[in-house]
Image 1 (cartoon, rainbow, N blue to C red):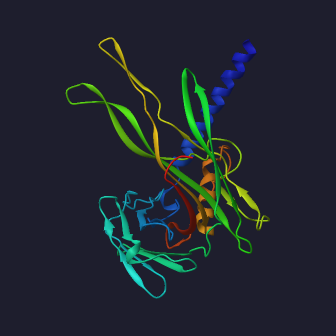
Image 2: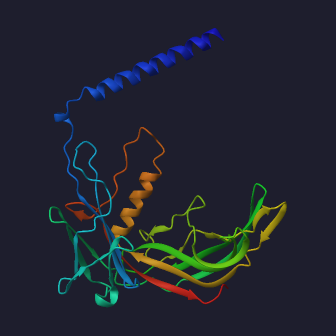
Image 3: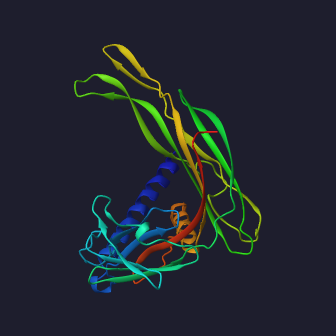
Length: 321
């Protein structure tokens, strides 16, 4: 026991010396020798023929060692343009959604075309380019199932989904699956008088594809040209019963769930979409504190961020099957 205490004391002493020396090391670096960097524009945009709007988010990077005055907030006074090499339009700022947005009816996004996005705030200029995949994935099939599980004393019900589709042969393709359910259900609401009442609401529930270890929702057809692809299992946990005790009485509201519509989608994404999201996964999954930080992919010249495209096939269901 004495030896154990001695080792513990030595460890704490050594750790303290290490921290002290690190602090001294950082404090002793002259400011002139710190790496110099400037704030750059950061853009984020994904375009597709199936989207109703062209949306662009513009922010700025915050340098680690330089005093640039950058805040990292959204930039509202930039000039944002998109061109297909023939036509060019300016994308106006939408204050309500805090991004630059343009209806596709005013500038349609078409398969196989290459688009260039340019952003300037008067001092900084960036550009990015992407090509919309030419083909949509072959029509997908789907299978729903019901899953009942318990977490402690709470019993939940979930709807699961698996999708299957055939790879587009002869091309290099990257795929992503997506899906939402439009659900009506009842909730417990407190009125201004304090009375608890039942209220019906509608909400879009997205499928969660990352709840299980295993397959990734991002897939590549490398060495699988023309093969049959299967998605990971997506899951939506349905609304649960709400309970509240008022004046010694238990008030319960059952969700009485009604699924109004389902939208399923298989996206044929470009390399920029794939590489950017893969790099985010690598950074978020870096559990080793001593490993070098993963670099987030960017295809923006003069700045950071990504400009990507996809072409998708959708399945719209008027009711849950």
